[in-house]
Image 1 (cartoon, rainbow, N blue to C red):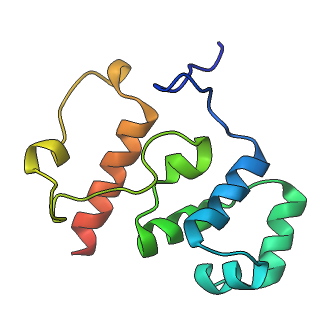
Image 2 (image 1 turned 120 degrees about the vertical axis):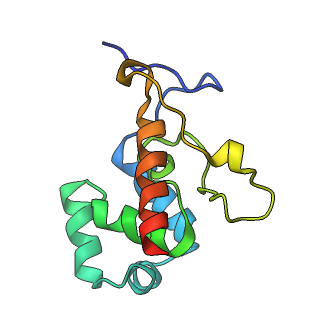
Length: 124
């Protein structure tokens, strides 16, 4: 089944180079040393990810926890760059509320948003 284009008409950008570039952009880093410091990892972990050509999920979690970076934006280049919570100014409870609908109608972005909402709620 072919990938569905993003609402803006662009297909998902899920190749490693695009994801890796978005990680650096989200972390506001230019060097591996800076990225390692932001992610609280060793530089060798960055080299390992480059060799495997895969962005570790732990990086996505850390970027979300520290900067509210949307993991789906890092993975696919789709959705908003950051995740807003209902506690933030300008976010109405209605826009942050979860709606119930059949699983067939839920997108990956919807599921990630719900997971992040629950994580934020449990974090206090």
